[in-house]
Length: 389
Image (cartoon, rainbow, N blue to C red):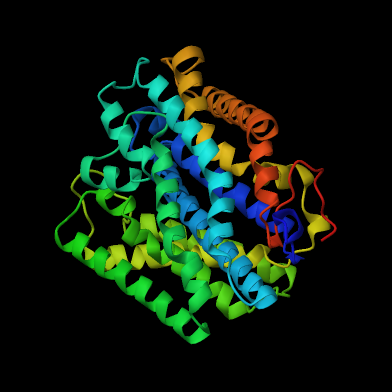
């Protein structure tokens, strides 16, 4: 049977596009709003400044939300494929992932190579960028620290790629009982790693970029998929709002109370790290449940669209920030509330423009090829926002 005729079903939830956008928005805020004490910010906010810093730090868990959502959706689609066809087409899975991830990823890496020669970056980072070329950017960050390059956030894509190495094989050969056991193993590996990194007072980059640590977020998404068994949560609006509030409480306390995000050598210790990352994963699950099953007609079409191009938003956002900072308003000496808003708004607007153009003219041809290899059709490609499903 031709690949273009193998589609056996459809699973598209517009609310998951909203979650994608929210995940990006949190990451964007984390990279935009100051996370360290700044006298200029303190002058504007006074005693409320520490709350802003902790909130900005908590926004980094938007990346955990990405991982949790990715694991949930991949697991859901592969389980549906196995139930429909009796097996999982591993080769087709990898073809779909390559067509979705690699073109934009390697474009981002190529842009990173170009930007390495511009002011504010370091040509010496080209050697470290080689790690990105083989999807080992996360381990580069663990061993060598962050790079001063707008392509730096692509380390997280390598973590997802490492997850994809074993994901289809697990769904293909494991029954539900063994699936739960695999998730428990992932949680054990993650928390054992956190315990060790706390004991040796590891730096933050050795923890945050560590793929074993991030396994907890993937395990959380898989467990949610297994627990729901393909059903959608049917809960009242006030409960959804409560779940959203609970997400922020978890994330904020992980940073403000447990100091999970720390600067320099102020590692909070093993149990604080374990507790903080557990709260991060719990918060991500709560946010996902808060949106799953929501009436799509209540969701703004523009947010769904931004979620659809969220991969591009993530890849391009630090390039947009670099352009704004180095070419436009980034060097203003007087930092005021209006200037901060103008700067952030310009960065966000340029990010959206770059991602929209990329999605329309660069990513869409690859996405159409990916669609030919779909077994369970998911996100639409190049079509108007559809909220009827």
